[in-house]
Structure formats: structure tokens, C-alpha cells
Image (cartoon, rainbow, N blue to C red; front, side):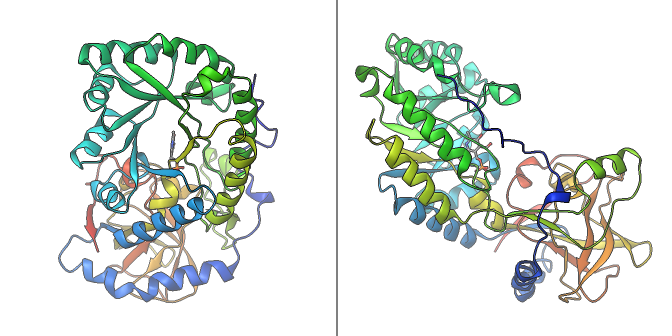
Length: 432
Ligand SMILES: Cc1ncc(COP(=O)(O)O)c(C=O)c1O
């Protein structure tokens, strides 16, 4: 059975067609962080002027909200925080304390999870090396390996045999048999063959299925795949199905504020960039709205009850990353130079986040030193020796001067983990 990716799977960005970010959403967001400004400024008294600030309380709140939403529709479910989205050990430690397991994607992440004494770990990802599989096998009481290919199944069998252990495993199904996403998992029509092959591997206990779709602003991609999976499972022989104890529906939930983008994102901006023209710095930001997590939970829960439970009674696993950690970390930086009222340079470089995020994504830059709820156009640039070192094209404040402390809130997901040693130091993390 082949899964046909829905036609609306076009994730390319065309901001021209996108709704605007309403001030009724943006202003309260900015106000919330200005209200806490003393707590953030306080951190700079004993630390360098460029920092990541981590708020573990936010992680605990998000973890509780996520679990409550899904348990209300799927009582027998388990939650694994996707470490790749923010790999600071304190983030994982906090989520373990909150009752989550960990979803790791490499030997490095697995070792961190083991060192943190995590009891429930799932190890997912393509191209696991022999060393990584060995680490998993040596800790088979705590680790479930989500297999990515037939080859990986055979390699795990060999490693588990030499370690004299039996490893719990699941298999990942690809959600898109075309293009780059094919690198993940096996094709759905290979599932029965995979299961039969696993039965010949006496050191691997295959008992789960995983799929994952990314960047879900709504639950549609997940519920469509759950419908497809229900049909696929109904065609599986009963003796194979009875070993199925879990289905892991992955992560990919977008935070409730939606995706915020600059007006200049899209084909027009690409042309401007190639042409080395300056981007449009008008204040009309765009927003791709996202569904609240409770709506995700209702829709995914209903799809599972309708398509999966009639075929097999199993536990449901979730691997949220971004949704849990996004709002828990913020960047603080200081203006070190100014070339007019409309261009400042900060001590921070975007090597701290590892990619040129703010050329496309919009986040409000808050001047904590001179707070105001008005947004003023200004290039907020980093101090790396490249013109792509951009934090934003505007700031909230009365004015902006050398020495002012700026904050970019909610930078917890896929920034800290991607930090890189490039020109400038990587900022310290303070926990408040
Ligand atoms: C298999 C798997 N699970 C979970 C996640 C976490 O996704 P997110 O951080 O978008 O929730 C990812 C992200 O790439 C993934 O590949």
C-alpha cells in the first residue's frame, strides 16, 4: 500500500498570500516580556552581556499542558521530549522530572540521556552507527530503538547478539516516498516483510511503529497518515499485529503563536538577496496561524480511536520537541555600535543560533533598557563579519543607543542546539 502525500503538502513560503500578524496578538506578547524586564536585566549584573536565559518553569508548564491535552483523549499514552530541539542538559533534566521520557537521535544525545538517569529512552534517526547501536544494546533495559531500515535491523541483531541481550524496537515508516523525506524509515508496503524478517532476529523484539511529520501548523498531516496507517494495519496478518504494543506519532507540533515571518520572505526576498538589495523593512509582519495543542489532541485522538483502535489496542507515544521548549529560552544582547538611528550592531552574533533564521522569521526585538510598545524600523545586526548576521529589522522601544540591552524572546527551539563555533564565542546559559 502506497501513501500518497496530499497535494496541499507544499510547504514553500509565499508571504504575499499570508495573513498579517494582528497587533492584538503581538502587543500582549511583547508586553508580557517587558513586564518581566527586571528579572532579565538582573542576570546581566553577574554575567557577560550576551546570554541565553532558560526558564525551567515554562518547560514544566508546557509539559503539563501537552500531557493533559493528549491524556484527556488517549489515556494510555507516553511522552518523550525530542532532545534535538534543545539539547541543554537542564532542559532534559527538567522534563524528566516532569515525568517525560527522552527521544534521542544520536549516540551523543543517548549518552546524555543515560547520564541523566533517564529510565525511558527512545532512539530514533537514520544511519545509526555500530557504536551507537552498541550503546543502545548495552542499555536495553532503558532504550527502545526505532529502526530506520532493513540494514539497521540486521546490524542491531548482530550487535545485540554480541552483547547477549534482547533489544526492544519499533520501525519508522516514511511519510513521503518521494524526495528528501524518503531518507527516513521504510516504505509502508515493506512493513509486513520487515515484521517477518524481524521474527528471524532473535535478539530484537519488534513491537512498535513510528511515523513523524514536521512543521504541523494543523493536525491534518498527522490525522491523514493515521487514517492510512489504520488501513495498512488492517491488512497485516493477526500473528504479526498481536506483537504491536505501541504506535509513535512523532513530534512536529507548532507553538500556538504560529509562524511569524517578515514581509520580505518568499520569492521576492530571494531575488532581493541575490541582487544584494536591502530587504523591505515595513512593519507588516505575517503570521501562519497554528492550532492550539488541545485541538491537535482532539483531532489526533479521534483519528486514533477511529482508525487504529478497532484494528489494534496499543499505547500511543508522542515525541514533541519544539512545542515544549520554544518559549522556555530567550536571548539577551547589548548594543555595541551604532551607525545612525536605523542601524545598530550587537555584541551577539547569529552563530549563537547557528543559522540565518531572522532573515526570514520575524521575532520582536525588545529594548529592555528603553521599553515602549511602539515598534521602530532599524537594522538590528550582529557583530559577525558577514552581512547575513541579522537579528531583525525593527525594535520595540522609545529609542535605541549603544549600551542598551535587547531581548529576543522565545528562542528555545532549534537555535541553542544549532549554535556554532564561528568567529564569536557561544553565549553562556543562565537559569532563572
Ligand atoms: C522523529 C522525530 N521525532 C520528533 C521530532 C521533534 O519534532 P518537533 O521539535 O518539531 O516537535 C523530530 C524532529 O525533527 C523527529 O525527526
